Length: 242
Image (cartoon, rainbow, N blue to C red):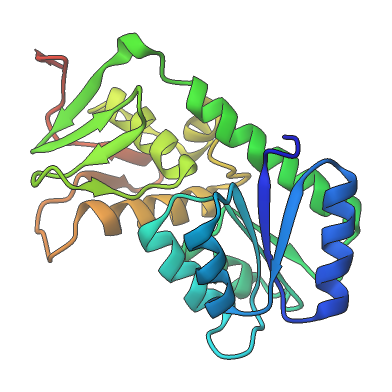
């Protein structure tokens, strides 16, 4: 978390964008501001971006649509900021792939705190899987726990956020065990960014959408009423049955 950490702020209000940039730069982050989705796309194509701070109310393509599109192709951490502060808006933001949600108006120090917390989660997640853990395999899928990639049966990489990868790894490693939402938060050491059961539900929904594409009838993650979630597919680790 220094000037090598490049943050892209997508905000059409020039005054707010400048304010966020000043506070982030004063806390040793490199910052670039984009006014809309098209400018964001150009900057992402030509720069290494470590985190995106994304406003919802933007000209042209709105932030929700941008977040959904960005999440489909990139695991870059995303914080949504919005003047909309209803619970449903927070839920929608998380469901389309955001890692955090910050309502406007906000204290600049809270923005800095959330950015740092998200970077810590990413860094902790990257260190959470030592090299000896190797790969976890199930039904043609392979999780490379060292490089933190998920491959489908066609050997294509499936884009997962750090929170999604951490949650999936915890469940796959404990295949056949029913894990409560509180246990999932505890077992991931808080790295999934979830503070309550609803946040866990949203992450599980996102994982299901990526694992069960194409109308697949097989469900890898089973919901246990009043219990939590259970990963049910057979799992192997480095050639051994789990």
